[in-house]
Length: 229
Image 1 (spheres, one colour):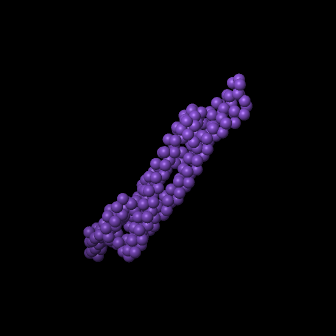
Image 2 (cartoon, helix red, strand yellow; image 1 turned 60 degrees about the vertical axis):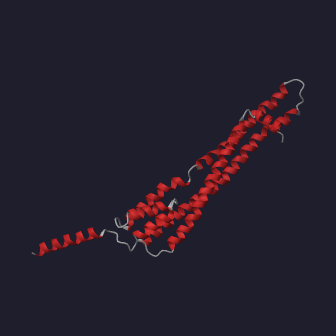
Image 3 (cartoon, helix red, strand yellow; image 1 turned 90 degrees about the horizontal axis):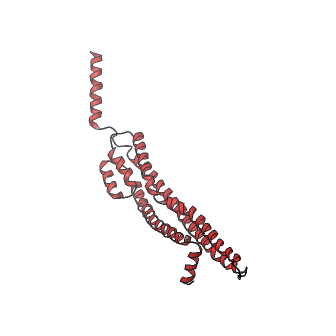
């Protein structure tokens, strides 16, 4: 395929193939970026979940170590929430706080995947639009004197290149989009596993500060003393 033939195809599509090339570059950029990020998040998150599963109990010191170990992983937000609310809330309240952290983290996981979703829908439509424009030029040959009707077939074949390009981009984007959605689901499952593990291992931790507990005991003793006297 020569450059002259490619230039002719682009001219016949009235520049639509230029737009198709831009869509392909954008799709490849998103695929490479999100593929690397999600893969690394799954692998490092799997190791973090395994380390947490091997921990029997957690206290404030262990939570601080886990925060450093998590680094930039989404699991770090959950451990940081457990660290900040350690000893200040019961397990039910802490579970609600951890749910908030998961909900705030989830939008970061599927970031820019909407671009792939848009390209999957837009590319075939844009390819069909380019084919229709090319068909106009192909059938216009019949109106010109001295041209055989068989010359139309070559123009129709060239016009179908735009549709084929759009379908190729859409199939590539659809495969990546479904694969990345599955990876996001796996990461959310890891976050839910970390939430459960944190609650289970903080079950034996002091849920109310010692000073507050002592204050409550003194008040109750004072009230009992007054009733007896």
